[in-house]
Length: 49
Image (tube, rainbow, N blue to C red):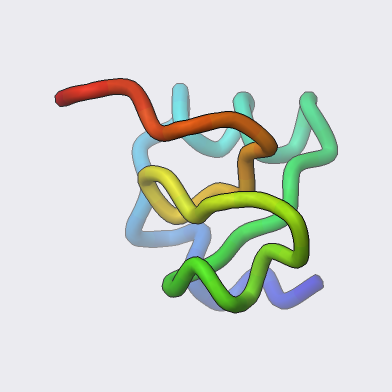
């Protein structure tokens, strides 16, 4: 997992990614069987923002 993009995130977002062991992404196809929501792979439909 690359950490080069973590600098752009807020500390709260970093904790969510690092603490949850979630896969970072930019596109839906990067998440097999899931979706890319807010640069993180999830396995449910993205909540409306």
